[in-house]
Length: 560
Image 1: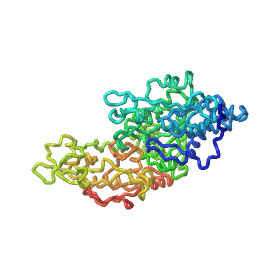
Image 2: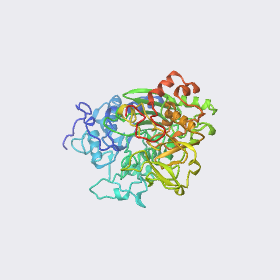
Image 3: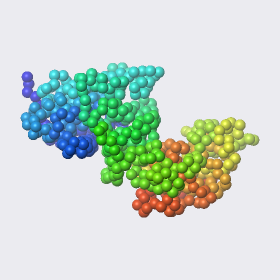
Image 4: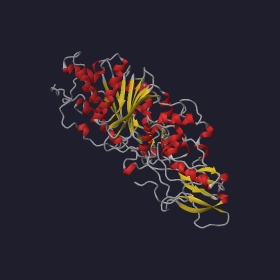
């Protein structure tokens, strides 16, 4: 037999895995430096749970990357084990064979990435070739498995991942993107079929695909990363660490059950939260940021939340994932104490972030279609008898902030609001970020400019309605309140995307709208400290109210 390649994992300059381009924003290659941060977090947790033991010196621990692409996790784990097991298994070749055959396992997500992962780990696309650094495999896949998996169609959708049959029912020449770990009802049995019986993995770690874009065009494409988390937990590893988008904290398409499950699971012990995706994955754009978490099966407790921003640790705190009275994860460590102060002043329960029902601003906020009219409802450009003034945005080809007329007989919802004073504000606002920076970078605008709706006016779905209000003066004061940084800070805590529906006002208290509101008044009312005020001032951009009597095109922010 031809002698095989000698073992080496280092000495490559540059490291090829720092140079490869991402396949897409949904299938992101993990940089080696970031993978090693995750492995450091894992090793610290292992030592804490095992009386200081060195994870990399344990020859019995099994590792699985269930969604390997470049193979970086498996490669870096192998490198650490090669060093950590040197004393117990002195012969290098014997040590490498043991690690790669007994400890390191992966499931490729495509044919191409499975070959890339094998090249990264075995130094050969075939685990049993003469160039492989291990001599113990008799088949080319080694322990990095990939076989084409088909979707299971039901009513035009895959019953496992929700993929569209029209987009992904394809021939052999194209990838199906039916990822093995999430296309089974019995993941334990499936893993036994792939790697053999009695395969209990101690550590599952990786960076799963985030979504399947089969026509959703990014923002509306259905997420799938949560399916990897759920399946991995069913395998009951001792530790689980995955990279996922942060949007699930407060929203996300089809993620309500996942969010409830994650926030109720106190085995998630560490979250490293990156507001700017570029701090983790240079050159990648994912709205809402990215995170990796560490789940410890045998050690429930509070979660250490570490916030990263602009290449530095912004803050760190150990706290519950789900604060008392909240239905979302409060992303910012600095925000929970501020919320609790506001709730206490408003007469809420101690250490809760839930406002008393009568003190909630949402009592004044309408549903998504305040008068039942969709955004593309055709309004008239001239008034007829019995018409009401209608604020709208008719979509492509129409000027934003348009005004038209609708017959009163066509309005079946919100009738009680028509002849009242009210405030209109956009039902969506996509933050651009301060000074044209990333939309996830502070300072943020959060909401668009509000304007007054006089008696006899309505709107389409373009706007939501705040009211009814007793007078024009009250309407002006509501506008002043919305322009306050503290108000928009509280909205931001419940606003994971551009949508600004009723729900995003959950943490906002109502006020006495017989008076004008400023941040100075609000800070004093709630007894905020200088540090808390400084954080809010840093996070939120100032809003000036150019005109609150009509929806004009003038921006309320100086730097847009």
